[in-house]
Length: 267
Ligand code: HPA
Image (tube, rainbow, N blue to C red; front, side, top):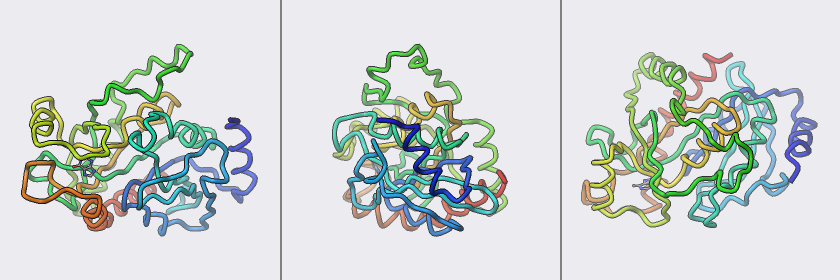
């Protein structure tokens, strides 16, 4: 796998776009690409080492474009650990973003909430995470750089910027710690009670391996979860992927305002 070649291929077709920010769009959030001006897209299938995107709601395309004066790259679609049992499926896409010149990676996903006030359709800015899977995407890495410092992995300065944008736009932005469960089954109510005791505010099946890979690649990171449900056992809803997709649609409006505001502030 030759990342330099992939980067060169993308740059040769990028019409001068020089992305400084990368964004990964999670389940039901792919429509954010509609805000791109001058979009150029590549199918993951045409990019060496990129995964084939799996779950419905995940498209499998890399976009380059401009939003409010800032060139960005978007990964529309991720691969989850539960799809293959391989934790570093997003390694090549994330290193490609770094190779294209991105300094910052904004991750988005759908998550279940453990906080009564953070109801479905709302957005939570992540402050930290708990890796409950025992798995790292850096297993097998040989260089000393594999010992990645995870303090302030979710960049405090970027978090402040998001809070300011939320305030300016009248958006209630929750904040909390995300706990990574490997899925694909949802959690049991007992697991959610355990998660709460351990300090989790939200649970989900993604983001954490990408945060680790991004920090390893030297990128600044921020993450926004769209709350699609209360976590297992907190209400009488039956958890399903269909519900995740429907409620992601409700939260996508605020997510879009937050992301566009951030990109505007970056230009
Ligand atoms: N658990 C795990 N992943 C999720 C959830 C959840 O409750 N909601 C959306 N993704």
